[in-house]
Image (cartoon, rainbow, N blue to C red; front, side, top):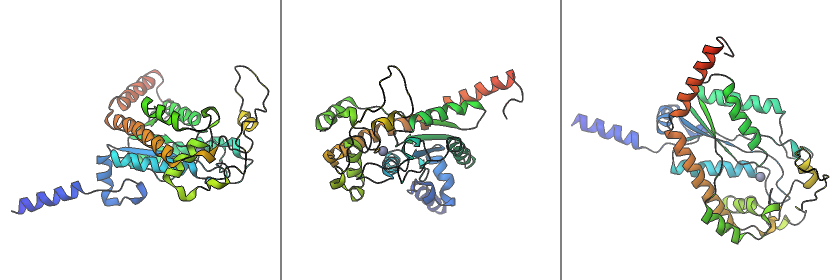
Length: 290
Ligand SMILES: [Zn+2]
């Protein structure tokens, strides 16, 4: 009888729902969270910057945080709290932009990952909410090969469901080529997630038109291009945004992230190959970059 009670107690403890946000977990639930997540944490990276005249500064942070929450409801992982230290050098001429120096941005991200790993995680899965971040984040992930670490960093690269995006294509009212920042799709997602923060009636008080001021230089990339095109840091037509479009986009995003997260949680090859690689580096150059 005593054994049965003990088993029931253990079962109820094990099957108990535990929070997924790091800041909402108790110390007593930490080991369970590590086990349930397969030592996997989602690091949602957002930004603070103007999003047209109508949407909040934290649009990208709000979106990526909400996506992480929806994903973790389907596939458990711990979620790192609000992180908005990304690349946004192109919007420093506008109030509300929080842009740290580039070297500090990289250093902070590395220190954050080191500290996450020190708390027991082996897999850090970065999801991104801001259009100016992917180059930085991919570069950061590649720099993880600069020295031996006992954790791996993964970056979600989105994939679209063709059928869903055909439907999205039919629903869109503005030109996708210019719907880049604070425009129809981004605003639609916010209308779906946090309609209380969108002032849609202000969407037309500024123009989100591409001004194309930079001289044409074929096959050339240069940093000022964005300011050349969108000096108001608004690109698109938010006034045509709808919550229905936002729901479809969000659901497809969640699907793509869940798929990636499941693969990351199950993966055993990355850490094994990392170890093998650094053992070879160590053999080749003993004492290098400890
Ligand atoms: Zn944005």
